[in-house]
Image (tube, rainbow, N blue to C red; front, side, top):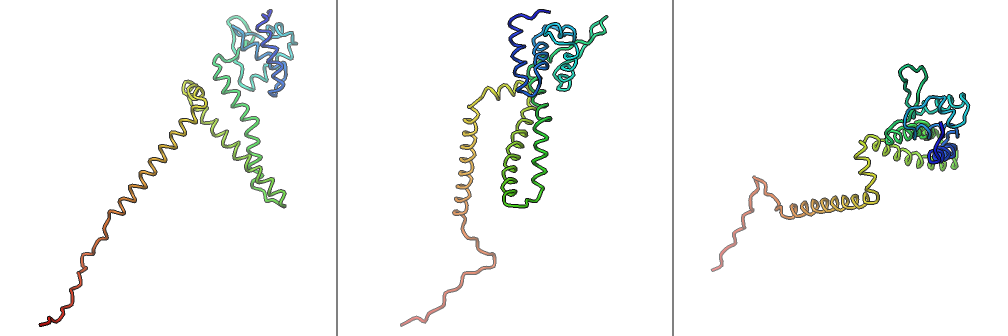
Length: 216
C-alpha cells in the first residue's frame, strides 16, 4: 500500500509530534495512517505502508486500543483483525482529553490532596504546602470546568467555542444586570423603611393636658 505525498507528510508529522505527547513515533504514525485511511486496515497492511515490523505494529495497536483510539472489526471470510480510527473528530478529542486527565491529572490531584493532610514541620513546609494548595485549587477548577464541557452536546460546545472573547462581554452584561437589580432592591427597601410611620400600640393613650386655673 503506497502512501501519497499528502498522507505521508501527515503521517511523518504525527510521528514526530507523538514523542512530545508522550507516545512513541510508531504509535503516532500508525494512528495517523488509520485516521486518514478510507477503510479499515489490517496489521499486515499497516506494516507494509509504514515499513514497520509486524511485532512493532502489534505493540502500537495495543497501545492505541488502551487509549480507546482504534476500533476493531472483522470482514466476512477473513480471520484477520481490521483497525480504524473513530469517524467523529469530536469523539476523538473527547477520548484523548479524558484519557490524559485520567492518566496525568487525576494522579496529580490525588497527590496534592494528600499533602494537604500532612502536618508541616517547618516554615519552609508551610510555605510549600500553601503553594501546593494554590496549584490544587487551580487544577481542580480547570478539571471541573472541563468535566462540565464534556457533558455538553457537540452543537452547544461548538457554539460556545465560537463565541471566543465575546464570552467576556456576556459576563460583563450579566454583572451589570446583577448590580442594577441589587441596587434597585436596596433602594426599594430604603424607601419602604422611610415611609413606614411608627405604629401605635392598641392600648396606648394620649396623655391628657393638665388643667390650669383660669385667671379672671
